[in-house]
Amino acid sequence: MKSEPDVGPAMLLSDRIRLALADEITTGALLPGAQLDEQLLGDRFGASRTPVREALRQLAASGLVEMRPRRGAVVAEMTAERIFEMFELSAEIEAMCIRLAAWRMTPVERSALRQIHEDSAFAVARGDVDEYDRLNWRFHDAIYQGTHNAYIVEQAKALRERMAAFRRAQLRKSGRPERSRHEHGELVEAVMRGDGEEAAKLMRAHMFNASSALEGFARQVEKKSY
Amino acid sequence: MKSEPDVGPAMLLSDRIRLALADEITTGALLPGAQLDEQLLGDRFGASRTPVREALRQLAASGLVEMRPRRGAVVAEMTAERIFEMFELSAEIEAMCIRLAAWRMTPVERSALRQIHEDSAFAVARGDVDEYDRLNWRFHDAIYQGTHNAYIVEQAKALRERMAAFRRAQLRKSGRPERSRHEHGELVEAVMRGDGEEAAKLMRAHMFNASSALEGFARQVEKKSY
DNA sequence: TATTGGAATATTGCATACACATTGGCTGCA
DNA sequence: TGCAGCCAATGTGTATGCAATATTCCAATA
Image (tube, rainbow over all chains, first blue to last red; front, side):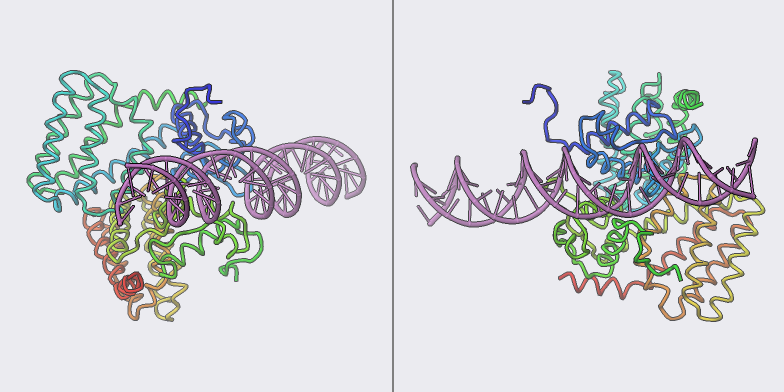
């Protein structure tokens, strides 16, 4: 009986719960410090405690929830300060990646990066935020790959995945895609010159600007919390 | 001595399994690509599949094992190259931390860092590797704290925890503690001067030297794999 | 009245049982 | 002989039950 047009068992139940909880936490629907009772969550999602537990474990690894042995899980404090802290790490990681990439990328990789950047011009011109978001992802992904360090690629992707929920609202800010693309242009220039330190500096600024676009959102979370 | 893994239920069963598996993977007892059958592992540890699954999930998050949905877990490829990659990320994270710390640490934190460094002189002189290992941990931990970014502290600690198994054999290398302490001295100097970029550079060198101490070990893993 | 001890409750940690997907092999047909 | 499709076996994903431990509340005592 698949009356509901669900995505089917293509996605694991525990993954669905994980994504749903991550969304509720990042949007502020679940307030910081809230107890995450396994049984209750299981009831809410029509699942048993087992997939809920798996989801909570993974969320704990990403820092969205805090697990205390035999004392259950609570939503991690998600103050504006903590969101900024997460962005700062994100920015530093991105800066590290582009610094390494600027030194290590092959000529082919460099021109591929430039190509992605040029493709994004259309998306910005048409105001297609979703398309720009995809290209934005590919842009940063190309930089990760440019480090020629598979472990860094994995971890950077994982971190970016964690921040995805925050980022969603971010690009909608008026004028943000244009400015983002302009900053990408500067990044491409620095990478082309092989100037890793400069690229890292620009990336920090780029990420800081992106996080600033979230300030209103952060304050909103703040208000809900107290 | 509470440093010894307590047989009591003080530590969660899933954590014991996680640590044991991490050890076996990093020491090469479990070869890359090996299937990690949940039932078999459960039998080996005298546990059921449930805590084994939790352990595997956490190991997957740290990159030691790879999980393919409905197809089980396998030991991640652990070539010498991959070990070096993990160390590179570790080094970059440490460098990032000390760069931020050199700029942000309070005077109290700076002198506390220097104090830890001075305390370690005794341990080195007595050849007490375990004691030096503890102080080494506290030294790096103080640097994490110095970033004044709680999220970075968490993630840096988690990463260092993952590398712990590798690090264990590392300090045993003859002369390594002396050299390590000398390098720490230079790091303290740079932090005292507030020279973040220089501290970061020194930290990368420090971590690189530490990883070099593992080269023999890495080759050994390599040989076992093929 | 405040504090402490203990019992009751609730919730996690672990074990076991079941359902279903994936895989490998086997059979039948081209 | 080779390939397609089916079937069984293996093993993961999920549900449920049990045991151990943390929390809470109440009562007894100082």
